[in-house]
Image 1 (cartoon, rainbow, N blue to C red):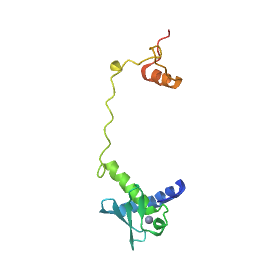
Image 2: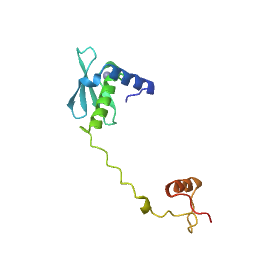
Image 3: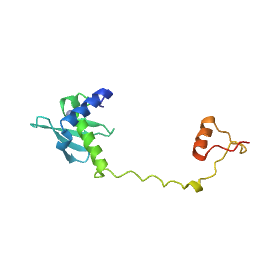
Length: 133
Ligand SMILES: [Zn+2]
C-alpha cells in the first residue's frame, strides 16, 4: 500500500510535470506502464494494483512512497481520459427540466409530511418560496 502525505504526492506530481515524464510513458499491458527515468538510462514499471493504487518499481515505489513515475502515469491517464482515448466518457447529465414542467413540491402542510428546516430551504431554492398561509 502506498502511503504518502498530500505534500509528498504533490511533490511527485510537480516533479513528473517538470520533467515531462508523462511524455515517456508507454503502455506495456493493461494496467501496466513503463516510464523512462529522467536520466533516460533505464525505465521503471508502474502497475495499477487491485486497490486502484499505482505501484512503481523504482526505489521510492518499492519503499511504498509516492514517486514521480506513478504521478506521471496518473497524469497520462488523466490526459487520456480528458481526450476520451482510454476510459469511456461519463454518462451525459440528465436534460434540465423546463421551468414550466417542474413537479409540484410537496409541502409541510401536507398531512403527515414533516421536513427539517434544511430540507425546506432546499425546496424553496428549487421551487421558490411557498405561499404564506
Ligand atoms: Zn517510481
